[in-house]
Amino acid sequence: MRFKILLIIFFLNLNINLHANELVEESKIHKNLRCLVCQGQSIADSNSDFALTLKMVVKDLIDQGKTEDEIYSFLSDKYGDWILYKPKINQGNLLLWGLPYLALIIGGVIIVFLIRKSSKKA
Amino acid sequence: MQKIIKSIIVFLFIFVLLVFYNSLNRETNYSTDYLVGNKLTNINLKSFDDNKIYTSEDIQKSRYTLINFWASWCAPCRIEHPYLMQLSKEKNLKILGVNFKDKKINASKFLNELGNPYYYMAKDTTGKQSVNFGIYGIPESILIDNETIVLKKFVGPLNKQNLNDIKEIINSL
Image (cartoon, rainbow over all chains, first blue to last red; front, side, top):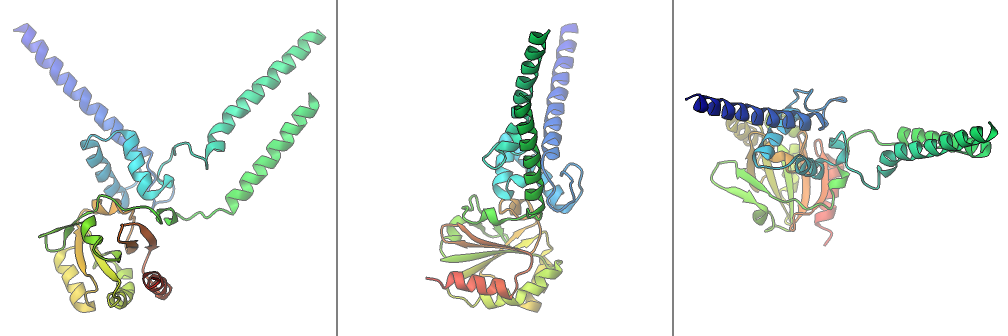
């Protein structure tokens, strides 16, 4: 009897967790989608007609089993990369993605060089 | 070493200036120009009277199709309507009207009052189908060829210039 109760609790908990994951994923996607008719808002922050429609489309796509990347890909195909707050790396934004790393490497090299120079002097 | 650091600082300064210059001269409005040349896929629109589904096959029957998203509650749709009426007389063009988030009775009243320019009449009561066409407000129109390739996209009501552009494209062959 005790085993059966534990089993029911386990499956109930599993169901709640799975549902929670689904909700998190949906809201995460909403936060990364720009509301094209709003001023600097994601569709998560907006109640505009466009944002509400897009939320319904995202829900449909999730129900169809599409992954997060597939949803972004579908929507950027329809509205361009502008709809994504975090666009994928492409030729146009390569510098934007790469520059911080480049600056980090160059900075690191300069620091190492300066440390070596000062230790030689000492 | 100091020379290298100076060069890096100068380079960064010039880079930041270029970024600012580029950003100030950039078009800040959302543009749909990139859609031109794309192929429209998965066209699946319910007909206005619910008895048919329009797909790419229906559109491919005509040399050119203008897909127009409209609603009776949309004031700019009234402004562009006379241009659609003119375009409906063109031989090479068929107009697919997609009634967007509207009530059937109001849409019918609108067409009875202003005339019906649409060869195909479809509806999108939830607005979800319009996302497949990259629509984010109405009126919007998309001119496509018989391979469903986007030739031009018009955001906002059609005007005299748009009318001439469409006529020029469809009569170019």
